[in-house]
Length: 507
Image 1 (cartoon, helix red, strand yellow):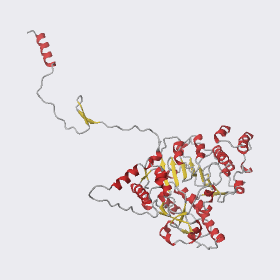
Image 2 (cartoon, rainbow, N blue to C red; image 1 turned 120 degrees about the horizontal axis):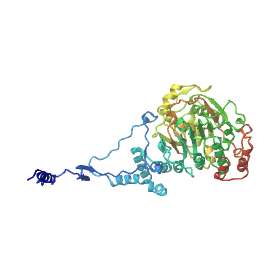
Image 3 (tube, one colour; image 1 turned 180 degrees about the horizontal axis):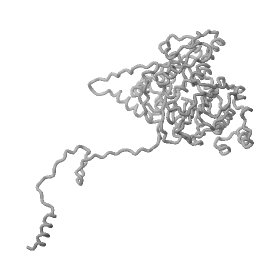
Image 4 (cartoon, rainbow, N blue to C red; image 1 turned 135 degrees about the vertical axis):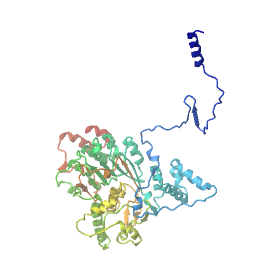
């Protein structure tokens, strides 16, 4: 055989697959595993939903309602362990309760209203024990338990924050609306939304506290006098902001003293907080005539309201009830635990409760006695210690309660709300209407204050104006002299129109 022929023979022989007598190995595959013959790999497939990048239906999602430092809150109690049998299956009642808890959002409210009291309490206990709550669940139970003489703060307040909101503002607004005022809303915004979206905040009839803070990271957030003017038009022509007590606009250079001419249209507004805005000078003529008091200085809003509440309380007890209060003034309260007991008393019993309430002594350590008269003392250590364990909404929540105490909730009654009996926690009067607090953006109180001002500029009006004066137009000191604005004023004065019809006149 020639050398070339031998070479071709050997190459062809080696290139042919060799027969083998080995059997296919048995792989230890588990249920659901798959085998790729090409690579010899064993793998398992999973179906994972793709993130939508939206907070749609956020009010139905359950979130943790326990705070990181809640054990330091006043009135905290360790949760009681639930006794479960070590052997045997669960009872049908327990199974039925669990199924109801998981599907309560689909049960009509009128069905739950006819549910026996013991079952409502059992369902609520299951939610409390799980430490998870959705806004819709809270709204249901706050309504069902609102007439109880004794409940907990969990039924009276709800909080949820979105550090990075992913949806338009309207997505968060709609679940916060209650036309029947079953609850009121506290909305805090520290992220950027478009101006037309902010204008539509007037569509939340039960908005009680509105806070918009401009941070360095949200320079595109544009809030100015024109926005306040748009809100004032909605208030005077559409009856918006009927229960808005506190309006806080921080670090917006487009907010000037001219906005003082618009805030009188808000019927029950009591606090206009404009720290870091373009307010120059110490005197603002015309505000006093409309009942506003100017506060300028380095002081906490809660101390301001505590001071006014104490003075009003003392005067009212002496004037209306001929009762001499004991001369100990309460400073700002510390954070109270969500599980703290809420008791309700008749409104006519409030004066006696304020003078002395022996049954509420266990939580008196929530307050520090300070002199009954004179300027409010500075106590940075006390305030810093409290703030470390406070929830993000507690500052304005406390101020809101204080303002309600001063006014005896008459502002809520003016809006047609049945305020009912006065709610109390220990020695404290709290808001008798449930309040839902939602924050869109980071907590401004936890951001580094690199370009922040400690100096407060705040306008306070404690008394309610008569209805005839609530629609008084701009004060002479702050009127806009520009002729081009007269057409907008004429629209607001002479004809009631929808807010959307006049936006183009000044936006």
